[in-house]
Amino acid sequence: MAADKGSISNTGEKKFNASAFLTQPIKYIRSLCGPEMPHYKLTYFGLKGRAEIARQLFALAGVEYEDKRITFEEWPALKSSTPFGQLPLLEVDGVIIAQSITIARFLARRFGYAGENDIDAAKVDGLADTFADYFTEQKNFFPVLIGRVPGDKDALYKEVYEPARDKYIPMIIEHFLKKSTSGFLVGSKLSYADLLLAEHVSTFQEFLPHNWDKYPELLAHRDRIQAIPALKKWLETRPKTPF
Image 1 (tube, helix red, strand yellow):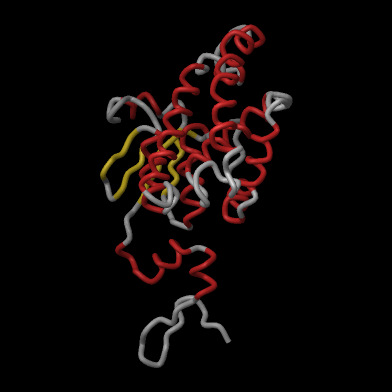
Image 2: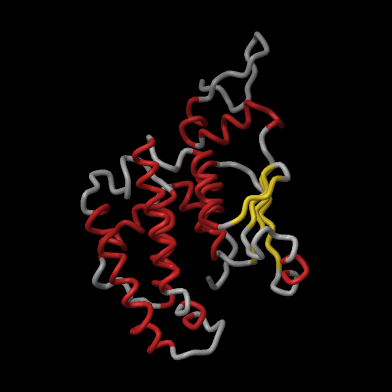
């Protein structure tokens, strides 16, 4: 009979549980190490938004963290105490890390989702930086799309969002997805760049159902990534928010 998680042998040592290790390796290792693992606290609004990739990385790694969600009314009192006047923030044993991509990169490196070697890690980081450029170029569109600020949604779609989408997405497809033999953007393993792309595709499809009609490769990639069991479970059970 296979040993249960945390079972003790006759010598007083914990028996190795291969099934638990293969299913959620970080969580299993944490269970063996005891209480000395880092304490993580992620602070953001009650939205998916810019904290969602960090949450997905915690879910994939099976690592516990404090998911602190504040209201917009609470934010003004907290803003001046943050390094750059922005959220999300990640605290690791009380040390604060800011900026969403930096947080995702930090967690991905810790948990094994930043590339299998230095070359792959550089490619993953390059993709993340490219996503940041893409998001910046169309940043004035999304607040109007979701109704947070007034504006001409149709005009901004054609003048701001479509040019940015059609500039960056074909490059990602041609240079990464079409060259991949694994289904992942880089190498043979899931990375935080895959999470960034898949979550972006899902978010925009919710508001613009036909947005990806001419890019079926993105939908296939999204479906593949979000079918990963630990991630699928998180997506099904995470708090329901509009974006």
